[in-house]
Length: 50
Image (cartoon, rainbow, N blue to C red; front, top):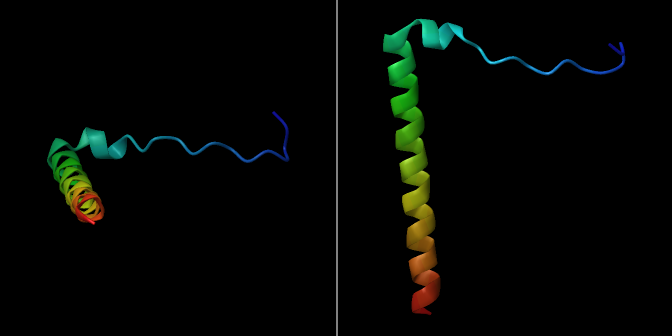
């Protein structure tokens, strides 16, 4: 491997080893995604009304 190249970060599997923490993280990510999508949809609706 070329020493000048940076290594690719690996997926942290520790989260998956702890189901309780993993579920909480997934829930937060889903909630954040839904909130962002709602904002985008509302902005698009406003643009279409004009």
